[in-house]
Length: 317
Image (tube, rainbow, N blue to C red; front, side, top):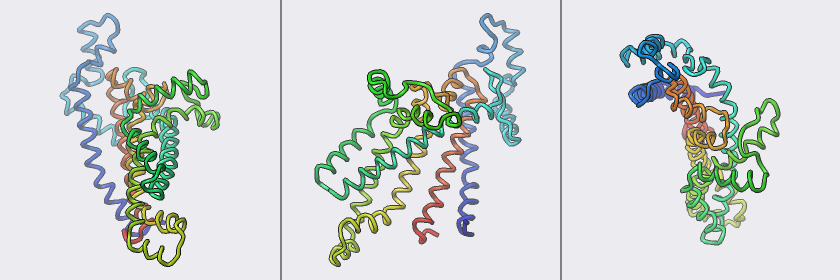
């Protein structure tokens, strides 16, 4: 159960998020509409006429002032209506819900890999500071943080999928159909998406752990004869918990945006690939709907991190 103070945090964060979401929606709406390309021209077919283009613009309201169009979209949004896709005429909400499971599977899978890999490397590097393990871990973190998602994804496809045939190169399996096959098919995209996360968690956890191990209270524990293992796991991890949750939250938010390129490389029918396709086709309502969904996810992750602070450190309450 959430305490009264934590409920106040939730309410305050929601109130703070509302203007941020409004600004994000307005900026993305304006950029979409003033950018090059005309959706009416795409919908008019192979041999469009001025009359047919004008009819399509009037049908979808593209002939109205842009601020009027935005106000109309916001009014529909407040009623729970995200509009319909200009290309498929499918309700945007249904499209998002159909594609969301594939995206969530990749993001959550990537976060598990990043958390486990980054924690192991970060703790090992801090425990053996200056040694070979530390140099290998920090070197890997520096290299991994500089590698772009799509390049790592193409390398994984080339070696592990095409050459060695260990994993499927493209596509996805619905988790509800076959969980094992779904996880297996999502392995390469998750690894590609997790590389930079492993690097960030490794660096931040190593630095935080070294600071704790160099603190006076740890020297006191050593003087009392407490073993290094007990100091590391019982006292060290407890004191770096807030730092770890912070960096995990930041990595999680970054992974949500990182699915755009990852899903495109692996031809995964998720929200990221849908967003890129919709942006190319000037499918305004799909783009706006997915952007709002991704923004809500980032807000939810940040809110969860704030609440976990109080769980890990009661002084935050």
